[in-house]
Image (tube, rainbow, N blue to C red; front, side, top):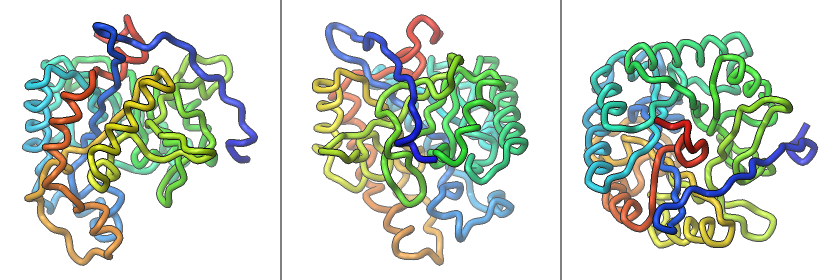
Length: 300
């Protein structure tokens, strides 16, 4: 089955505006540098404890950056990180940000069976809620790994009490992508209120191009990211969803070796430019948490 053969019901809603300006959704995938997909071939999960952790330092820098710009965001956080840095998780919530799940140990959703995925998202939700004291309503699959092969994941998310997912990227990539999925918020299940908020894309002709952050934000000039978000806001009249990782503001992180050229390029390109570009991004647009942008009245 392909997404051309699947019909999803899109969500109709009036975009959130402040002083006439459309509000976009800012999100952070809270994982450390040694946990990313690009390095998974050389750093195995059982070896994570041997690597120096930089997640607390980097996430604190992001929290300070957001505070300077009066921005609230959604932090999709690994339970593995939360268990080792509970004070960080409590700070995220105390400063008014939304806490959401990124799974337990950064296991791709499409590499798990139903039972394993259920245990993963159930445990992650419980760990985050127990540590923070806050309700966890959102989930983002590691490496945007919900696609046509595992649409059953939406049923599991709904049954485990999640209100929304942001796990689909409507592009074609080697690691992920559901290129024919809706570009904007939709309901992936018939008869259920679970919502999916895809990462922002820019449509050119019949093809979608990444427009919501990640590696492309580091690789390409800032003006292209700004133009993409402007176009989504003005032409599509929709909020953009932007994401990045704490390790992307850390040019001094340990260099992992050996690493093939493609993975090295993807992971390390322009790390020294990310913080400055984020400063500009936060000043150029209006931002808020995922729940308040897409589920107004529900976000605390």
